Image (cartoon, rainbow, N blue to C red; front, side, top):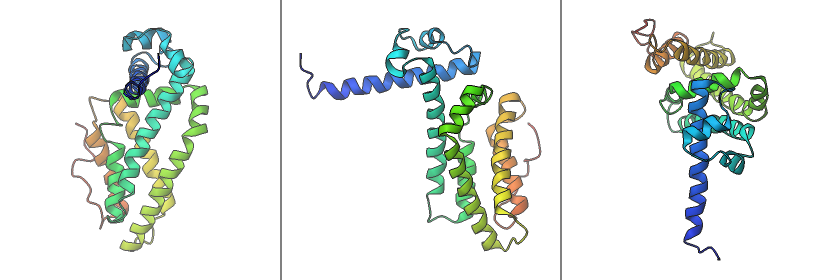
Length: 218
């Protein structure tokens, strides 16, 4: 029977919903059991879906795991790009907004951080990361260099190296994410964000104020 116009969007939405259900279930399973525990049986059981649906939508578990990694990368990129793209805002406000985005609940949840580091620990997925996510990291670091250079010019911070500071921001963000994964009872996203702002304030004291509690563990 011919599909009606009214039915087509519904079927399309259903496919998108199923794909998202599987990605969400894959993230939850990886966070709990690691990459090796993210089997089709475990993921579909968690999603409440049939076993064959992974092949239908992703061509198998490698496809699902690759798309899960891509989903996380695009989600994070979209968030910081929104912050960076507000060219009417001052450079310091745009830099602060990027830092805030990196520790936003939508990208910095315990499950998602666990998934990121699970992928980093698997050789084949590090290769996939380099293939299609490395450009995202380069794009973000270039944006950080640009903003640091603008702030340097505004404040006359002659000794600041924008390239080095951008690299330090990226590296400290990764380190703080690891601390959030390993020591969730000691540090939370707000405190982690404060520690990063504290480091930036040491370079741009007229543009950033170091949080009073940035060096304390709760």
